[in-house]
Length: 162
Image 1 (cartoon, one colour):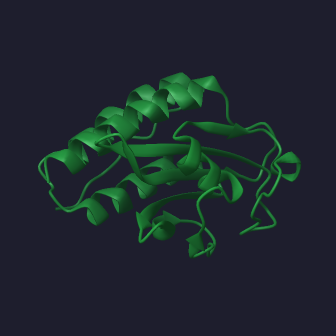
Image 2 (tube, one colour; image 1 turned 180 degrees about the vertical axis):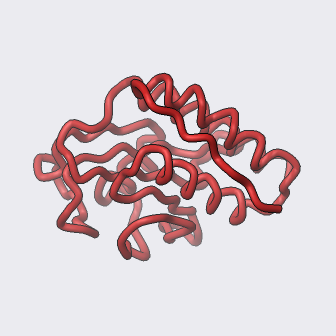
Image 3 (cartoon, one colour; image 1 turned 45 degrees about the vertical axis):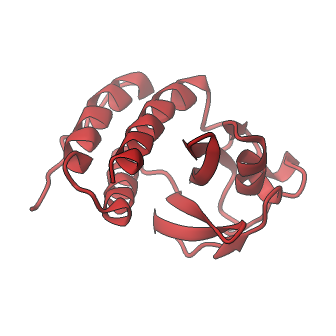
């Protein structure tokens, strides 16, 4: 089934308030996690135009690249390494205004300037992360964290029902 997004102009909050219900409608009723994650990446990239939007999934005690939109990426990330591995280890959202200042940052793309990573939790365990990179400094803030966490909740509900 083909989907069409209605892209919203305006401030960040307005854009999230428009895109999140659309994403929820796309993934509802679709049991395949990879298909859902792929569509989520595409929707976020289309709405916001960020450099990179993607998922890493925990497999055999490392993060393995999942669906994404943007330049090629690191394939595997160890727990505690870089922003993604740290978000996985700490099980919390990490906002990095300038990736050059993050200790141990993994530069999958030299164009990346700022980043936000959100853990995906299932039964109190991190099963993956949503990673978003921007080619602008200070791109992400608490507004992004708030709305992207709503999106993570949709993903977590989808996983628990599959």
